[in-house]
Amino acid sequence: MNRRRGAIVLAVVLLVVGLAGCSLPTPEDSAGPQQADNASVVDSGVVNQSTNETTSDPLAETWATLSEDRVYNQTAHLLGSDAPSPEITLREFDYQIAAGQQPIFAYLGLTDPEKDTVDGSVLGVALGSESVRINETFATMNRSERQTDASLTLVLVHEFAHTIQAAERWDRPDWTRELPAERGSIERRLLSRSLTEGGAVYTADAYAASVGSERSQVSRYERRYRTAPSDEVFLLAPYYHGGQYFRAAVDAPAALNDIYEETPPRTTTELLHPNKTEFEPTPLNITTTVRRSGWEVEERQRAGEMFIHLSIGAHLDVDRAESAAAGYAGDQLVTFKGESGAQYAWATHWQSATDAREFATALNETLAIRTDSRAENVGVRLLSGHTVVMLTGNSGRRELITVKGSGTALEITVGERAQQSARIELPSATRHPAGV
Image (cartoon, rainbow, N blue to C red):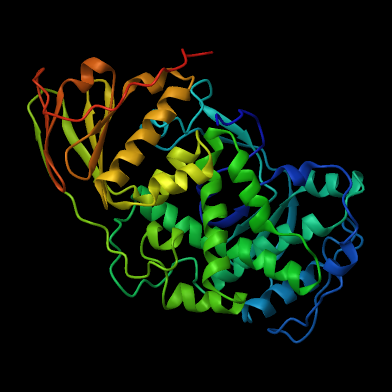
């Protein structure tokens, strides 16, 4: 299926320096009046464990039926934390955010080529351990539209979970083993964000269950992830995959401490598949040679299985993405910097030749159904063995990149036009013209 394009306001978590995390909206957050499960959500206070007493409600005049102190106390109780409650303020959010962090996002169709930024706002943000800001527009709508406070309550729980993560230093998991993903890599960023946002999403679900509400942030982000426009999928992935991970990995929020401090997943593969606790990515031995003036190797990094999953799922359905990514063994994304900007050679290694072909076929299908011009600047090569290489740039620039080898040993050369190495070509798919 080709994902519908649409506009739901979003904001990138990394936009705010020091931001512990945030709540992104889903369609239900802007829906009309909802079932009145408000009372069960609100009347659930637990005395603040750090002070043995409740504090005043600074926003009581705005949210007449909502006691944010009670919500915080219950959240802290569920997480087994005695961290003091944060300050809460109302503020309107209206951020302009970059449409994509790196050119690779545009090549994979994860950004809208017609927009440099995404108009967005968030429902709430947590700034470290001491401050939570709630979107005033959302809070006002919550009252004026005669909705219940249930949705707003779970936004508070989500942000309170972030402040507790920061207070307990769970936002910086103490990995006891060296992470195979480099700092700053796409995989490391996705893994870190998924642990942070997933923990908050799961906590919100546990809170709802503890007060007899059937609301579920995990389910809501799953629905949103499955239907979101392609340029929102990268933003939503940590909420969806992180929430699914904690739902499968722990029985209660108090166990988040064990995940963060004792046995955190080391790769996005372990996060996607909690049963793969000993997964070790297959290292790729890629040698690079640059023989063209003005070109150089700028960066090497691993993107990881989750990035593969969302790159396919952004254009096909999520179940197809899961199947196409399931045989992942390892990858390396090489960035070349030239006179025309960044070009990429993305080598992925697979557990079997069948897995490699399935991924290559799915990736080719995403290119065929995309309507943006960038899709024409991506080529997919299925090499002999278990390896698929994706190259970017127009056809002339891609011809400058020679790939030789198979399996985990590859030689990538950037030079003058040269005869390409033998490769298995996938059947060409009919692409929609740009703009259709």
